[in-house]
Length: 276
Image (cartoon, rainbow, N blue to C red):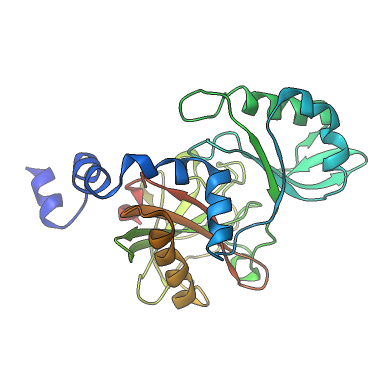
């Protein structure tokens, strides 16, 4: 059968991932460390792992009355649900124009739109279990010039799957018009497989189908080389020691100085990385 052939090739299936890796090597009591982005950020700070700056947190609905004053003091920022998943509920603002907030895709929002979105976050609309959540506002990372032309508007990131402290697989996730400027594969972002030893590009996929170039910019993917690859692998590996989780996905971004920053962690990393 075809699934036996895939298993013989070393391709990991959903059941094997859940039982043999997640269930075996990830203690459920440790999940909150990565399921809650705020806890992850504070944990990273204690372990001297660099991450995007946290501007402020909104925990209660009545605090939204004063949120405009806080937001006017910063230009670009990202609003995230602490317990969201799959990129849901993330709103990225690249700047302000004539009193309105401009998203990475160019949509202009007023303060009421921002408050409504944050209110939905607090109500648990995007949380894993639908329970009340908190809204995180963090800095918008100015990403490395290396990725100019490779990502449509949004910040590209690097997903590295780490097993027992050893990086196993890696891919570069690139935003597209289809993904609304977000590096989320389920929404249409592109996954470019990376050689785990060198940080160079392999194959690329969009919606699990092979692609050779970016659909919006036309840039080919065959010449990508990630700078400081060894440092990036070390950062990813340290996340195992930081959390105690044996099988995790680490999401890392490179800022404009090519410095790696930890964006978030995932205790149930998806399997699409194998297709890239």
